[in-house]
Image (cartoon, rainbow, N blue to C red; front, side, top):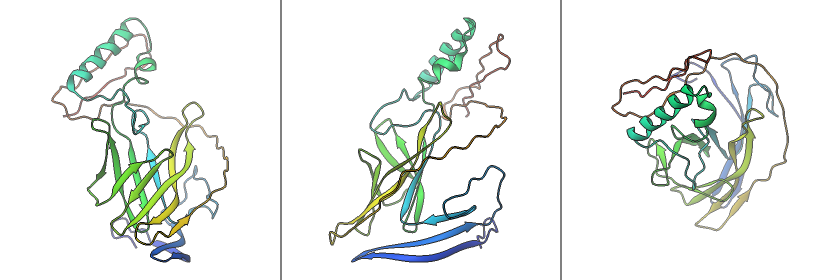
Length: 241
């Protein structure tokens, strides 16, 4: 049972893949926090998860990051002020401001969560110096590949994550996960490969939500506001201290 949440940790071991110094456990686990209305069953059942090697999940903040490429990242207080001016100008011309400028300016880096062979953590892409940074620090070397990521661990193993899973609304599909495709030993040269069968799934549901937009940088600026009188709502940009 988790001491933090009180949720029982239910894990059933099924198998262990071995190749010299490579050992990969395979199990299924159940999250006993309850089933929600919009939850979708996995191939092993509703609430169950198949654990077999690893995955990197991706949560988009602002625009989807593209490691190795440069979005128009907001990097300074001057950039924030310039964006505010542009959006207010759009409002004055009776244009919908976010329709233009949210496709141009990325307010913060995305969040990547890695989970493999008993190790889990978060990393982010630093677009200023094109580096991948673990948060908090972990002694891992994380690099991009042509199809995803590879992680070099301290035990001499390299984990490749290159099987992509895409999700999102039809107008904004993004890569939501990279599944493990290979584990390679730098010591013995052994390797374990994972192959996947492509499947398409579609779920349709309607949600009601109120969206607020914020800039997640700690610049010394007062809270700012953009007012568009011709729109039904007021949209704001906050510059939190």
